[in-house]
Image 1 (spheres, rainbow, N blue to C red):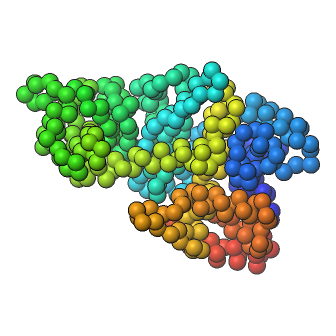
Image 2: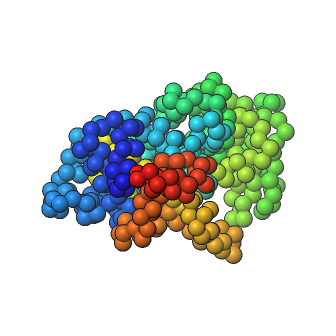
Image 3: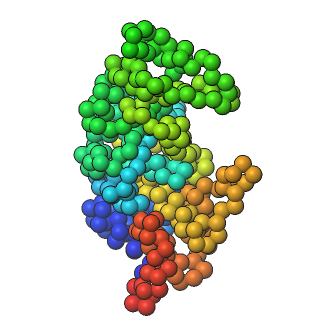
Length: 374
């Protein structure tokens, strides 16, 4: 079976489209991985078709203009690709934004923290500049809960933007733990009724030192646990949570994984900022294509690191490449230069389908498929 055919079968079961639309989506997915470019002009070059390039370009334009996307189905696909059902995980919430011409592109994204990155599950394109509203955050997370429940959520992590009485109150009502960063001048109220900036309780911390307060304080009408660490640059990392984490700083480090996701979608991977598409509905669809391509590349990187050639660690202790980039380069090499072995396309298809915790069975299933003539 050809790789594109296998992907088409897998995606059709999730997306509910007819064969022509699935084939177009698969063609874009493979073209994106070949050229590492989401710009439609470049994507049309990487799109395998007998039609001339202008026709291919118009076909891609029509696809993003006309095709309806079921984002709940895409979220289930994303969660299923990594086998998150029945697991415990942290969610991380953040925005990425840039400007093209006079249009501000501002995307609020909810992802699952996973092995140094975040797997995108839901996203909302904001029709404005600046921060998301409390209502928008609640709507995004509520959609996740409606599809996947709240039992797997160990906590939701967010930067200084993600505070607010309504938002925190809703998380408490939903029994969802949260850990959010605070601004140094954020006002707090202690149990004695004294109001002060949160930094005043940690003014004496030296670089590298950290402290957790023994009692809760009131911020945005919610009683929270406060922790702080003095960073090497002298800045205070201030954290607020509605549960007492044994090591809040270790947990909060997972929040940075969504930054790695955005870097992968942009300059370190697919050059999202070069898309030239500015209509909000179409940007949301572009993100779906990027999310699926990102997830596949990350899974291939996991497999290659575990079973082919482990990534070398640099002096600072971090790997020489991200798992995403390791897998992306492998996919690009094979798609551009052809598969060196007949088993490789089957292997990549299985790596797309199977959750990473079953990755050790890939080689056995490649052998079984070859014996059965699959």
